[in-house]
Image (cartoon, rainbow, N blue to C red):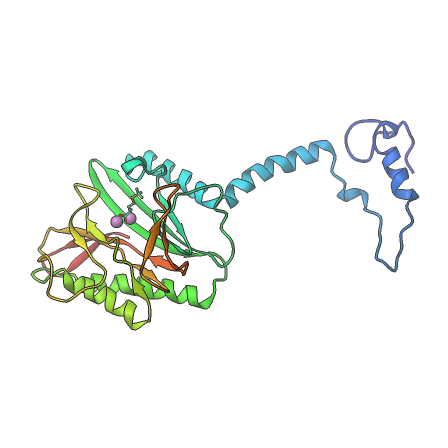
Length: 281
Ligand code: MF3
Ligand code: CO
Ligand code: CO
């Protein structure tokens, strides 16, 4: 046993009598019912104040990791700035963050927030646009958080295929409606709807410029695609209805009206002499 004047077993540096003596006596005084599985806590799992302070320091970092969208935003901001870029979203028409993070039923323009703690089963779109030396590039991807329901995973996969089919249809001396149709037809063939309130856009010397790129439509319609044109293909595909709402409080977050899942992928492409080249993905 411990002498009352020994240093306490907990590592506090205090004398035992001033530290855990009463504590130990209290633990010893309790009857432990073996049938109920009642057991004494071993000393090695008791943390002293220095230990607890250490765990608190780790917890602060860990919570920031879990508050992932805010963390992503900070990481993105730091990366962009340190590479000589400007995060184009930050301050764009008052948008408050450097990237958009859109989770589950959020279609696009989700605002990174410490309140968005990602959980297993979520699907999230991360959308970044940077301005480097006056030129813009714009792209977004979906991420699956842990194990995701099969229906959500399929939506994400088909939405990527919609974008890829749209890009495959992008070639000079043909019309933009080819891209829209290729995109939308694949969504419809899979039983999904295409968001029409927002679309792709010319990008490069401006963030958003001509042409407007619908993600469903008729082949052979719209603007002629010619070499040197740069635009995004960024289908927003809903599991349910195409209709969307904009958050009345923040003025940005676009959600599916019916609450169903939505996915989006985005690339910036260049129309070349022979087809299309992906510039940002
Ligand atoms: N990057 C988005 C797009 O694909 C636009 C985001 S604008 C913002 O066009 F203000 F919400 F950031
Ligand atoms: Co875009
Ligand atoms: Co974008």
